[in-house]
Image 1 (cartoon, rainbow, N blue to C red):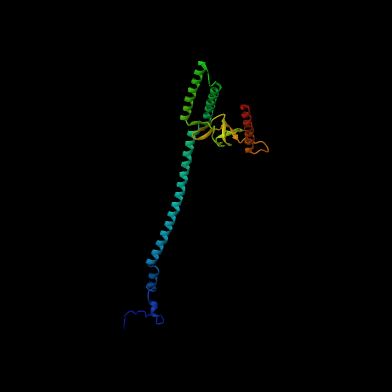
Image 2 (cartoon, rainbow, N blue to C red; image 1 turned 90 degrees about the horizontal axis):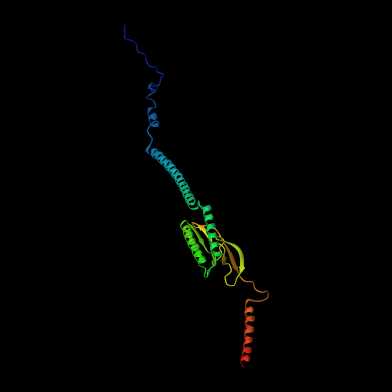
Length: 232
């Protein structure tokens, strides 16, 4: 009697390929699916990343430029405000000082131009003129300048017309008389000049400008023979 153990025989109905382990079945497909990306895919992803970074850098650059321009404008406005405050903070005081200068000029004008034999008036006028020169020099050193507009063309930015007067000696639109000077503080108008503006003289109705001269010359021509008759 044979005592050797019996070994189970494989099922004859089971296909041979089904006996292959499941781990080995389909292994080449899993390696292809889970393998490394191709160089083309890597280059494409890198290019997209670079473009995204470049767009971000450009956006930040534009924001920085706008912020820098705004900061520059703020600095310029602040500098201008500081300059204006330094130059024009004394505007009210300057107007009061200009009023004192004009009163000094009115006092000088009230004195007689020719004192004659009166030495007191002569010394008084000379003293007032010296004080005025010194006072105006101090004002000019501090940016306060007065300008006499007599004879200049009327400028609405600097002059205030108090009257308009016909004149044949002054061109129309010019200042024929200035009651006060035009005062400026560091180039900015402080007080306009009060002036009288010349205008063209009025013509008599029905007469042309040349007719008056013709009529005026006619009597002179008629008077000449009369003088000759008297001489004879």
